Length: 188
Image 1 (cartoon, helix red, strand yellow):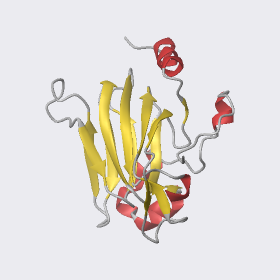
Image 2 (spheres, one colour; image 1 turned 60 degrees about the vertical axis):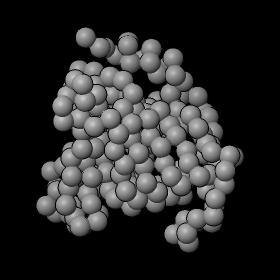
Image 3 (cartoon, one colour; image 1 turned 120 degrees about the horizontal axis):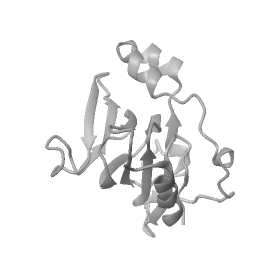
C-alpha cells in the first residue's frame, strides 16, 4: 500500500513543489524556441512548448482551471486519474489517463484543447498518479485562470455537483505548504 511517507519521498526525489491548482509539480522543459502567438496571448510570444511533471496523491485534486493553449497529459507512473473537461458546447467529458495494460479504458495520453475548463482527480485515493503535462504554445501564468465555483455554476448549472467537488476559489500558495520560496519560470 502506498502511504504519505512514500508520497513525500517522491516529492523529495523529484524536487516537486505545491501547485496553485492542487497537487505538486516541477518544470522539466522550456523550449528555447520563442514563437509569435495570436493576439489572445498577452505579450505576443511564448516558448514553443513547456513540460512539467505533475503529481496528485490521495484525495488531492487539480481544481477547475483553463489555459489559452492545448495541454497534453501523459501517464508516467502510479494509478490512473480522471480528467473532467467542460467542452465549449457545455458538455462534460470524463477521460481516464493511466496504463491501458492495467485498465482497458485508460489512455496513455490525452490533449485538453485550449480554453476548456478542466479538473483532475485520482481514481484510487489510496495511492498516487504521476503524469507529464506539455503545453503548446508554452505555458505562461498570464494564460492560466482558476475557475471560481459561482461563475462556473452560473455558466454550467448542469454540472453543479462536479464543479462544487473540484473547485478551489483561491490558488494554493506554495509558501503555505512550507516549500522553499522559488521562482518558477516558464520563460527563458
